[in-house]
Image (cartoon, rainbow, N blue to C red; front, top):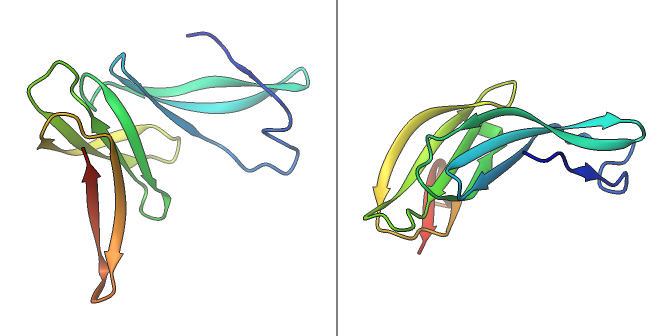
Length: 126
């Protein structure tokens, strides 16, 4: 993987960004951490997982519950999937569950409804 230099405008002195998550059609979800080096920032790999499927495409982070959802479009496959991960303190991901979807999920969102505020739901767009 090529190191990417990021502008100080992106990560100013008051920045609190600690982890960046990236999904790739190479089949990986990567946790990255910005590190200051020689006056600029570089991204270093913290962890990687291939547990999201063959073509992970959309990540939904629920930081309040240490939960990450990952959609697998399954390009060229018979079914897509929605994988849930626990976000560990170091930013790595532990697989919780995998649910099969129809091929091609492209976006997800976590939501609640007024009549059941203690419950959370997931909407998936295809």
